Image 1 (cartoon, rainbow, N blue to C red):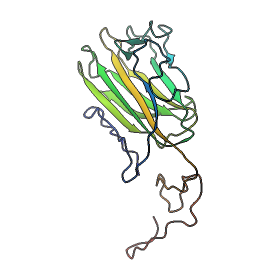
Image 2 (cartoon, helix red, strand yellow; image 1 turned 180 degrees about the vertical axis):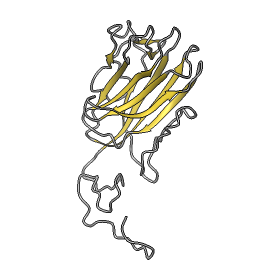
Image 3 (tube, rainbow, N blue to C red; image 1 turned 90 degrees about the vertical axis):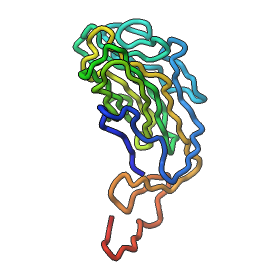
Image 4 (cartoon, one colour; image 1 turned 180 degrees about the horizontal axis):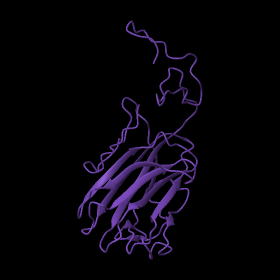
Length: 226
């Protein structure tokens, strides 16, 4: 059950996978932000975020000023005029009780965006100390819209953070990246589970709350081992 993500950001902006093949999880918990209140603290799902949006913005502070603001019902990110930094914002969710999780969102760009401009989406499982890039949105010219779909089931932690930041340019007037309808659905863990996510090449993975009694035993006359 691999994590499937498009990394060819110049072609496909509707990236990722929002489900496991052959596994039906009950995604009952929803954490969501529609940016309809004009604040960094909106909770539009049935489960609250662990924190408000934490901005990295030397040009301003809060959702109304600077390069990272809430505008037009979206999170708007830019670096105009150029600050020499990488403005962005991150928000944290507690996924310590989840067995599977999915991130979705919509985005659009303004008409001034050119091919050199880039915004990166990253994920952290240590409260933002380090990030794993999931997708870089670059090669966009002008006004473009799309959506993101990402399987977060390899990033379940008590302090999982989603982070959008300017990774290149966005330093001219009318160069804006907008994110909206950010939602994380997750399936809570009920009781004990025995699970193999096949995230490493081994017949001995134990990814559940209880271990398997034995490793996988293969019946393969053409070979032996994983």
